[in-house]
Length: 152
Image 1 (cartoon, rainbow, N blue to C red):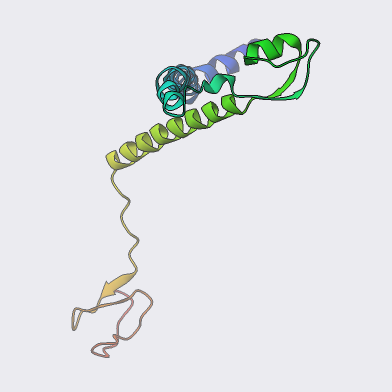
Image 2: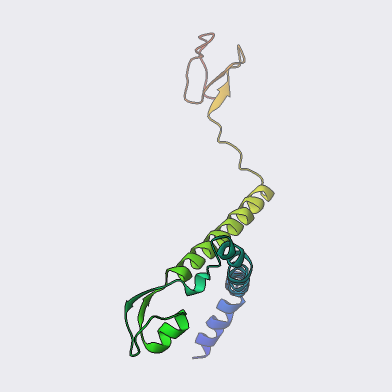
């Protein structure tokens, strides 16, 4: 049992576990911010442009509940026990996903620019006689037809 706790402590002290935990917490907070951005900032003007549409209340009743409809809001339909197809909430979720994907894509592009590009693998060598590039596996220069040794 003592070895178990020692191994567990070593596991927790590894940097990758802590990095993952921090990333999860930041990702959850970021998701809440993006959800609020979509719900409270982006969707109201879009709904206004489309004729005062509230996307959170766009739904289709598939089966009526205990009390018959029509239901003015999604909350009223859910309270009555109606089965609904909530396509407005789905539209909001898709917009949230697109925003998160764009932010992550932008972040990855910035981080990738910070790291140097790996050097291209060497695929040619220089002919010691005419100084043209020849393939590594070449035994004779295609330009000057000189015999190439393995040391060049």
